[in-house]
Amino acid sequence: MVQIDFRIPLKGFFKFVLFYGTKSVGRWLISCPKRFEGPLYPVREGLWGPDCKMTEELKMKFSQPARFSALNGKAEFTVTVPQAMSKWRVFASLNDSKGPKLIMRQKDVILSGKDLSAESSMVYKFYIDLPDSVSTAILTVFIGQEKHSDQKTVLAEEHGYWLVTATDR
Image (cartoon, one colour):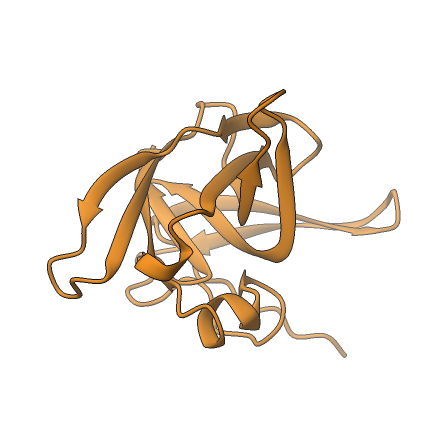
């Protein structure tokens, strides 16, 4: 027996199709008389969010939980890093969750200056704007350095993944 719970942020009717591999095994009409109020995604360890080294050893902080909603496809994602990491840069890419389609790659992030709550921190902001054709995307955040000769990024292993879902479109 399998139980599936839905957390739907809009009221209305929705089609639910279940697949086994590439074969459709069922189709249901879901009636949602009242929109779900509360967190859309339950917290799970190890699936989404930053690498443990990013938060524990490097003391990086992130403005969004591992799964978050982008109202009308737009959201802001902020990364706070210690001043000791000033030679490192924060990069992000945003891909459609349905395939390899790249939506955004930000090499030059917007550095908004020092975080007022911690003098020894720097804040990077990423602005997310999902195209209308994309309802769910994967935001990958990583730290790295650039080689000055060819401007290629040298990546570190510390990275994290966030699930971004467009709502109220």
